[in-house]
Amino acid sequence: MAKDMPTALNLPMADPLPEATQKYFDVCQEKLGMVPNVLQAYAFDVEKLNAFTAMYNDLMLGDSALSKLEREMIAVAVSSYNKCYYCLVAHGAAVRQLSGDPELGEALVMNYRVAKIDARQRAMLDFAVKLTRESAAVEEADREALRAQGFTDRDIWDIASVAGFFNMTNRVASGTDMRPNPEYHAQAR
Image 1 (cartoon, rainbow, N blue to C red):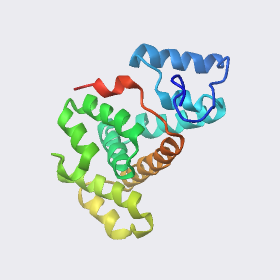
Image 2: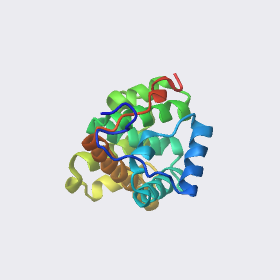
Image 3: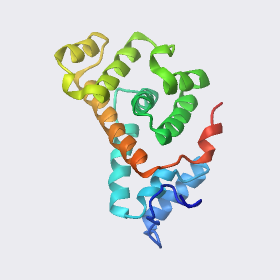
């Protein structure tokens, strides 16, 4: 992989980037201190980048009874099962930052079952990982286990949607050898 390429694929960013995309990248640089490699990877095709960011922003930042931390926890638990290097590094950093607990981020990366989380969060992650491991085996009893922990049907939709999104992105990241930005490694430690 070339040093300046976010993946092993030779798909350079559109040049020039459309004005709106460049503004988005500038905001990322200002707020995060970097443009995440996943965005740079998708920038070879601005329509694909826009579709990716729209879905990501809706699932991870949009209206939901799930907290941002809980959504990041799902991202990490799913990515841990899939062994997705990019997402474990990037979303592990997000868990550390949102929780203020570096130990939680590390536990979720290694094995969410050892994390010090409550029964509600454990049920949420059990469901997300089962959906990842064997989606056809998910049945009403699995949804009932979530309801018993206080999740609504809308919450179950959101859990499934976040898990599904990260299953897709994990496969794209692994298939293209997407590499996390070095900055993620030291964040919130």
